[in-house]
Length: 393
Ligand SMILES: Nc1nc2c(ncn2[C@@H]2O[C@H](COP(=O)(O)OP(=O)(O)OP(=O)(O)O)[C@@H](O)[C@H]2O)c(=O)[nH]1
Ligand SMILES: [Mg+2]
Image 1 (cartoon, rainbow, N blue to C red):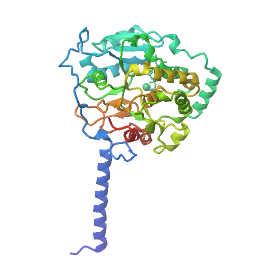
Image 2 (image 1 turned 60 degrees about the vertical axis):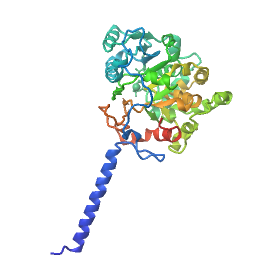
Image 3 (image 1 turned 90 degrees about the vertical axis):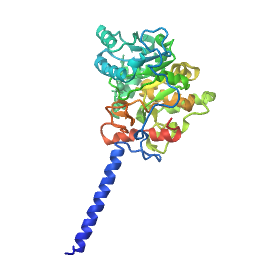
Image 4 (image 1 turned 180 degrees about the vertical axis):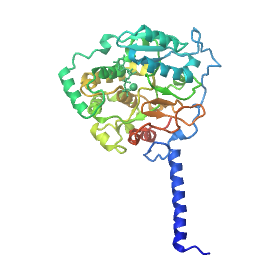
């Protein structure tokens, strides 16, 4: 019996619709959460990710025992500014990092605090690792609000930021923390003998086994800075950071690196409204709750002069300049971009963003997932702009 033409048409339409739905479902499961732009249609973290090329230092080929005076460790430390109340979140982080990396290499931990650590904090963090652990008080003069800051002006500005829903705007300790992380941490005497640091925060997660010495990697390749996540900032918090930076550059034109990241810093295509509100700065930055860096860069003449200029300008208090955009501008302007490395193989999360590679060494995160939570978070991804202008190295 012949099937009526309208029924045939309906059948064909159903087949086409089903194929269309299958195609779309596959696309969205290939790319779980990120809307990439700038000509990038696929998250590079979906491609199989291995270790970096070249010689790597491994724990089974060298002496990395915790107390060895002759160990293969280079002069580097894991550093954390942390409050006593965050002990449990920090212990979780330490467990992750020990499991995936540090139980093999035993780099020392240095914990910093603006008040003394409790005995419980010391006892429990010591029990979480075989590595040496050190507890340091932040010197008062590194933490206190500088005397040129007008506290009435601070309160007024904080109020205005609060009205724009800027988190922690009136929390003075948050501003102090951002300033310390921007321009003070590398001046702490406990870091004097070290060249490299890896910054760790309570509550962050590590997902992938890393089987080589990342500090030796930095040293052998002459890397200045390593990151995992690249984001946009809230432009209201940094309205005058770029104008102040340009002022500093005008007075110190020779500081600019020949191979800098100017186009990433000043991009006005991907999010024009961000660039406008931040007066010429894209607001793109390395998310500094994870960073592996060369202290010699931060202690160097250029970055230190830059920090002094910013500190005098007052934006750590009158706005809410974060250490992430400040480090990023410093690195992006004064370092050689070939010496900045994306640690794509280090699976990482600080709520709500992820760096999650496609690798059998990882578990607990979804390859290519950039955020956890509401869809609008995908807008905060600045990696496409970074990859476009700087690269995926
Ligand atoms: N000792 C001490 N550590 C602090 C203080 N404020 C922040 N920190 C630490 O500084 C780091 C950054 O602070 P967070 O509160 O995590 O700031 P954030 O990452 O911008 O904010 P969240 O999104 O809430 O995590 C963390 O390691 C904190 O433990 C403080 O007043 N004293
Ligand atoms: Mg945090």
